[in-house]
Image (cartoon, rainbow, N blue to C red; front, side, top):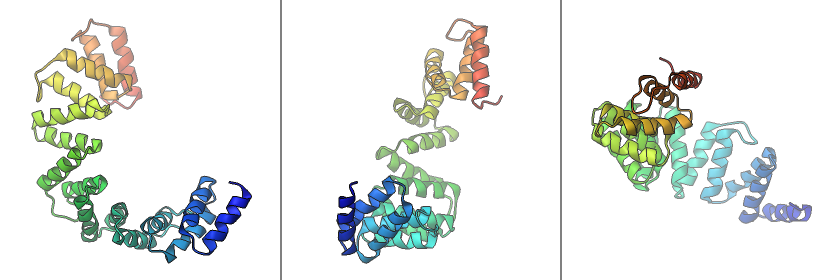
Length: 259
């Protein structure tokens, strides 16, 4: 930024021009001048601006240009939330969860659900799954994750699929794992291969299992690498190849697979 432009923005910011303050904060962050970024952002205190309060909350949460202070972060996230910023409510909820103030978190997350805010939906689902400060209720968690899936959240796709898989609802699990695999989620790719290999929720098909294991192996997914080695070692769906089987097994172990 030219010095003349910087001076102009600083002059405008000094008399309370919100647009100039926004541009200065962005500029100082871009050059890693966190102290001036925070000092400039402090001017948001004088505006009823959701994004400004959210920025201040973030600075205090992460310790950007100022010592981290979760109470101050929560204070500004709350002010932003009250002005309609759902994401700030989610950020405040994260702090409340960290403090084990689950009922306070629930207030923010409920608003997030009403506004189709996927991170809020997923966080509340996990609270119900784990029983963290709430009555543990897997059915509520599943309903929330189903809503997140409908909104296109790929993380919830795999999570919900695993719940169905553990509950032996294999058809539902396979359908979701297949959706995850179609968007190249590596964990879903492995599970689609596993479902084909074992005939869980779908007709058993070793050739298709091999296909998905091979896709995962190319991304160095350890379980896919190892299962692929077993196919080459035994000659299932592919000609036997002991040398390749050994190589794949070594790669699986190198990437964290444990027998």
